[in-house]
Length: 302
Image (cartoon, rainbow, N blue to C red; front, side, top):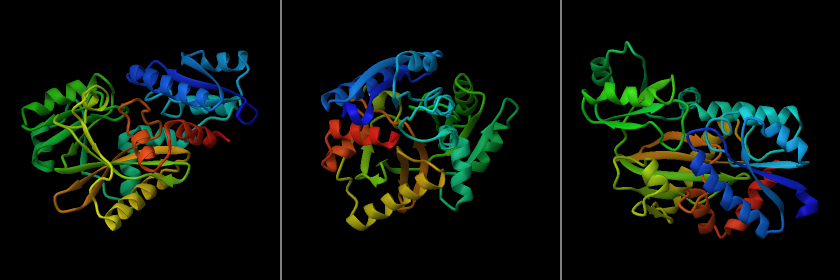
C-alpha cells in the first residue's frame, strides 16, 4: 500500500461550520487507512494547507473536509494547481454540488424531479411565497451542509424567522416545498451504487442533531423497497450523480412521497464517515468493511 499510494495526507477539520464532523470523519478514515498499511497522516487543514502539503512531501490527498473550503471546489482548485492527486470530485462538480440552488437547477434542466423552490431575500413577500408553495416548507442556506441553518416552517409567521436563521449562514437562501413521505440515501463509490438506506428520525427532519448526535435515528438497510423499486432508485441516484459531472464518490439524498414519486434533495460529494454516517452503513450492507471502503475511496485519487 505504501508503494502504491505514497505518503497520504488525510485532510480534516478546516474552517467551515462542519469542522467538528470533519475531525470525527478524518479520525476514522485515518485509522482505517493505517490499518490497511497506507502511509497516511492526519492534517487539520488551515488556509496554509497547500504549503503544508508541499513542505511535508505528500504524494496525494484523502479529502474529508466537509462543507466550505473542502467540498466546494476551493481545495480542489488549489490541489490542481500543485498537481497533487486527491479523492472525490473535481473543481466544477464540487462547486455545483455544494450549492443546493445550482444543483436543483441542473437537475431540473435535465428533467429530473426536485421539489419546487423560491429564492428568499430581505424584501420577499413571505405571504406570497406561502400562497405559491403551500405549507409546510423547509428553508435552507444554499451553501451549507449537515443541515446547518435549516428550518421547517409550518405557518406563514415562521417563515421570516426561518429566513433570518438561514441568512446567518449564507447570503443565498431559498425555501423548498416539503415532501411528506420516506427519506432515502444512496451512496456511490468508484462507480458502484451501494444499497439504499431508509432513514427515520423523530426530529422535524433529518437535522444536525439527528445526523451526528442522536442515538434514536433509525437506519434501515435493506430499506424495505422491493428489488425492482430499489434498483430504480439506485439508477435515479446514479443519473443524478452523473449529470452534475461528479466522480469518485458521493451520496444522494432523496424523498419518496406518499404517491411513490421520488424527489431529489441534494448531493454530498464529501459525505460523513463517522460512526453515525451513512456511506459506511451502506458499504457494510454490500459486504465492504470500513477499512476496505476507505481504500476504495482513496483509489479514486489515482
